[in-house]
Image (tube, rainbow, N blue to C red; front, side):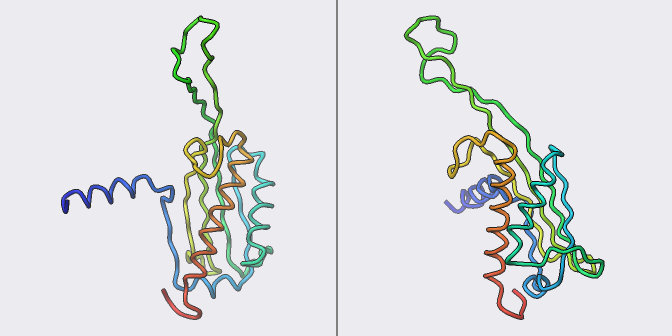
Length: 173
């Protein structure tokens, strides 16, 4: 059993949706300064919606106003549609009128990365989150990049709020 435990930990860690998760001890105090927001998105047409979604989620945590002296919040989002087909136990190419056709599902695989830096360009917080719309137990097949973006933004801010609440006030973690 002792030999299997490290293997199980490796497998579980490899399946985790978080890839990068950095937390500075000064995160809570660092969020008191103003931040400039910088976003990039693929597909590019989502940049405006991404900017609005991040600003709305950050409203109760930090001031997102352009400031040369303050910090920067950088957010990058990327989404790729994928197609999956399912059969309902029937042969996929049966011509029998009683057989059911294959079901096709379009789902979004997405990845979002958010970095919060203070005015000195030191990383206060960073997370990189991978979202698989097909395998998500909380949602049905996410079919549009807009839906995947909203879900990703919501989840990274849930992580940020949790990290802030875990930090002791005025001290390091």
